[in-house]
Length: 167
Image (cartoon, rainbow, N blue to C red; front, side):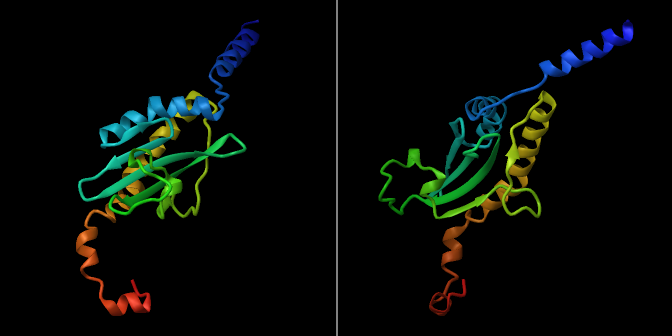
């Protein structure tokens, strides 16, 4: 009897730990578990879209991209120079990845395009956001740092490099 009770008790505990998420519910989890981390690093935004306005004319964008079929998502990173007009966008506070020419994905090592599955348990939820924070610190910040000294890099380009496409 105790064995059956133990089996059914553990089984019911595991069932209560199962998460069945759609993108709206996952967006709430991003806001709760990842947004505070981003805000600590100077980002503003909610849900799936975050922006950081730098003093060197750079706008950085980090955007969660849910899969149109559900159940998974990717993360896109992008950069825009605020002195370049965007014909379809008048307000840079609403800039999104789709507006940017300079963009990349926040991917795992040796992965061209990482799509993460929505977590199905609380353990997966904790593990997922820990991985995303780690990747952001290592890959995300590395991507954005490429543009920190863009003014100095432009002065190093000569006419021959431009003509030859050797940049």
